[in-house]
Length: 140
Image 1 (cartoon, rainbow, N blue to C red):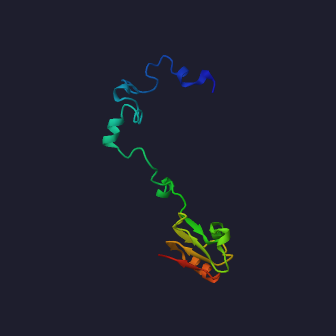
Image 2 (image 1 turned 30 degrees about the horizontal axis):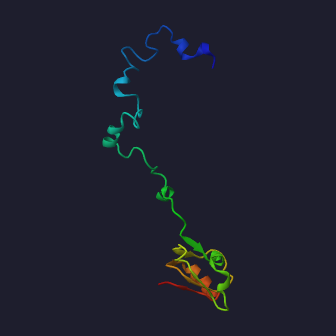
Image 3 (image 1 turned 90 degrees about the horizontal axis):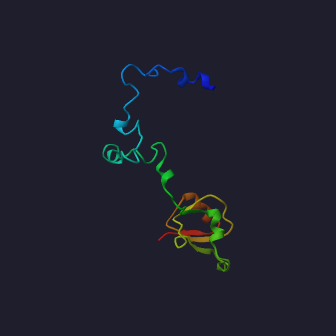
């Protein structure tokens, strides 16, 4: 925009610059700024009393968005990576998922060999796949 058509040039000599007769668009200094200015600075004590939830989470996002959860589940397709190499002696491979920090066994993936898995919770699909491969789930 050229300087010659800006509002500041057009309003030269008008005294109020289009904001009315008596003192409009002035006096923001007495309120510490316009709008939300200073809520992290000089209006902090007002904020903690009158609007304590002003800063924080977005109510349109689910709570899981704000939680830094470490995945505590594993799929049956990943069981081969949990098994030690020397643990298969003709029978099913024993895996203690609770000791490895896994809380739940999910049913995604393919089971390639028989596993005896110790885990606190599991899905029905995971149980079906393990039993079809000759393994079982131990819950204690």
